[in-house]
Length: 261
Image 1 (cartoon, rainbow, N blue to C red):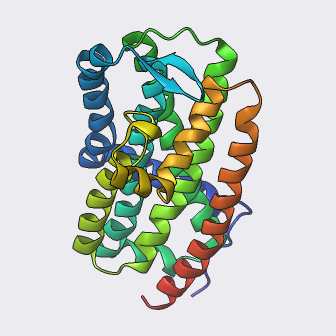
Image 2 (image 1 turned 30 degrees about the horizontal axis):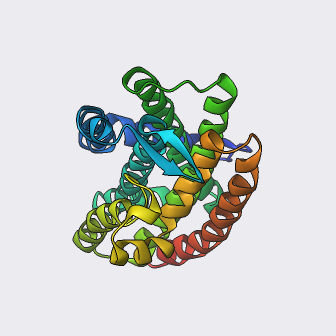
């Protein structure tokens, strides 16, 4: 039977559309990726912000609200990245993966579409988070600072998304991935200078923060808002390089996984 001719870019656009629908129509995925951010905002604004009006960061005092905004964005990035990894298992359990690879779809188009859809979700969540943060916390950043924070969040989100996709492609059992993903999310967030400066952490947590990738993602976003303008560009370039390295490994792993269907 003759297969339909695939238009140039058609597979990529179809994959982006499908992934966007999958990530937004599933109420469980949507709630799990948004609710933690809202909860952190409410709790932090009502409690820790009162306990610590300001913190010492990079040699000077900054308001706690300005210090904590990147943490809330990082929480959204981690949650959405876990959702993107979960969607990969949902495809296999529903036998959708077999249908996808039965179509003459380029693997690079599938992978690129999945990454773009996941990054779109991160950007929307980051924008919503920054809007809520501007309302909840008293921050006096200029529009340039907010734009730099959005760019830094996108760069960090790309690296984290690719990292969780890599873990999802290496683990074949869904329950194991969910257990590892949810536990690691909490460990990554709390074993990093998320809620307090690194020099104020307990010794064990401080040592863990040195090897915790979330620490450097937070440094990237805080450089966009708390450091001199342009400082975050080097951090963003580093995050994009990390994302590219993960992406190449994920692509090979996805190809191998598709061949074993």
